[in-house]
Image 1 (cartoon, rainbow, N blue to C red):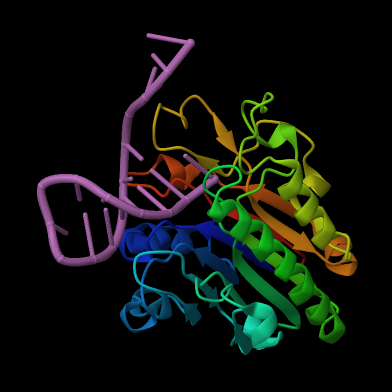
Image 2 (spheres, rainbow, N blue to C red):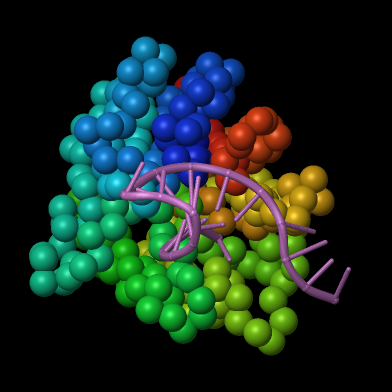
Length: 263
DNA sequence: ATGGCCAAGCCTCTTGGA
C-alpha cells in the first residue's frame, strides 16, 4: 500500500506528467494539491482510465485539492465545515484546501495549507487561523477514526534542516516559530512525520523554486509531508521523495512524496 | 552580491506561489 502526495501546480497543465508518473508508480492513492480548476472542468478521464476513483474540491485559478484512489473512496468530506459548525469555520472554507475520505480503512486527509504571504500580513494571519482550525478539525476526526494519514503541502519546513538556507534574524514565512508551533500543536494530538522515521538527513527537499537554478543547485524546502497516527506510523516500511518528475519538461515546482506499508 | 520562474485570467499586466 502506497500513499503519495504531490502539489501539481495546475492539474490541467500537469495532467500528462501526472499520468506518466502514475503509470510508472501505480500507487494506491495519490493526493494532489493546487489543482487550480473548478470541479466541472477537472480532467477526470485520464485518471479514471488508469483505474482511479476521484474525489475533487477545487475553485477557479487558485488552490484546489483532489484524491485519486484505486479502491473506492468512502465518506468523502469537503472542507472543515464537514465536521465543524459554520460559526467556527468562518471564512476558512472559502479557499478549497481540505478534502478527506476513507480508503481501505484509513482515514485520509489531503491538505493544501495556505502559503502565508509576507510575515505578519493578512495572509500570514489567515495561515495561522487556518492551522488553529485544523487542530479542531483533527481533534474531531480523531474522535471518529483511529488510523489517520494526513498529507499534503503544508507550506511549513518543520525544522531548519528542511530548508537549504536556515533563516537568520529576519523571519521567513514557512519557518517562523508561530507556524511551527501551530503545526506541532496539531501533531501533539498523536501524529508523527513519516519521512523522519526513515531519514534523518538534511537537504531532503520536496519543493524547489522555479527561479535561480534552485533544483540543480538543490536549494529547496521540505514542505510536503505525511503525518500518521501511531499504529500506521509503526507499520510504515518506507517514505521517500521521488525527485525524478521535478527534472521533467514543464514540471511542477513540487515533487511526489510516497509513504509505504506492507500489502 | 543579486536575481534569475511559472500558471491563470480575459489577458500584453496582475495576482499568487513559498
